[in-house]
Image (cartoon, rainbow, N blue to C red):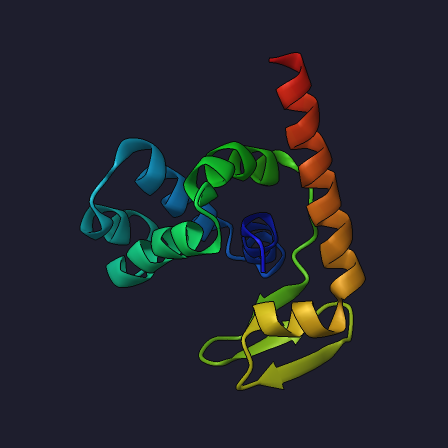
Length: 132
């Protein structure tokens, strides 16, 4: 899974605050412990998201720096709504799911929606590169 796909999945699954935390961590080198208090995301998860960016692509952090602001300002529907704990409701399927990550559900069942938003973000990044 590519960097942009990973980031778009976070937004579609209603985890936009993860993107804010990751962006702040990459851009300002804030401590994960400080971001944990600010965004309510465990510090190890924040650090592992940055590590995933590096593992996915040697330029993963650079891609994330460009992509996250674009993803945050691009209107995207929240496809799933957390019901607390390990369950969520999918707005497309109109069903409740247990014991599965929302990102996995979106990847498997709503692949075309995901691809469309990934394509939109990639096109926006490319258009910004031409202007600069």
